[in-house]
Length: 220
Image (cartoon, rainbow, N blue to C red):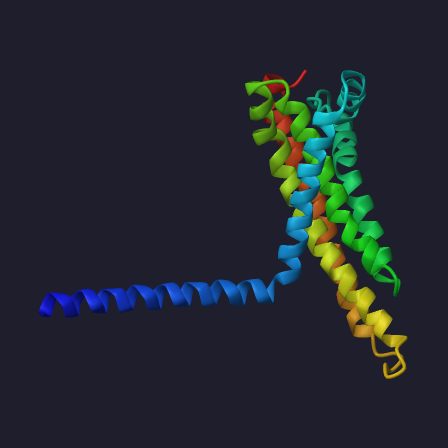
């Protein structure tokens, strides 16, 4: 009888823990649904990039290779700075686009496309290096994924912030929406994008460091 009660208590305790875990996950997803949505869009873009590369013929694959190939950083300080600017340029350009989209009442749909576009770039690059073999997989793990993830974080948060600001502006145009009162939101908008810009720069630094450390072993 005592064993039955003990087992019942354990089952009740386990079910209670499971219920709390499910509830906490549901609460997290509800609070971060936009982040989860954009992460899924980013991953969908990566899968789409892999599919596009896989369906490309050899001529197109070679042309893509000239664009996607990552080269080792050689030379002095000047070459390092040039490589850093080149690495960060695409992320900074997309952040600038997101910033401008947020300042438009119609910019939300365009901001939602940016994670998909960036994910396609990651997917194409991973597919290109994975086609090389085991050395390509190692190159992806050490040289591609680390700085891409940092840049992706900046762009995902930038997309959410851009849509938030765009929706605030669009509400101003509604009949019941009061005009004005967005100055504090705009200042916070600029500060957050400054942080995202710093993340974009950090992704470039990580890219250059990994190429300096592993480039001579994995890159041409």
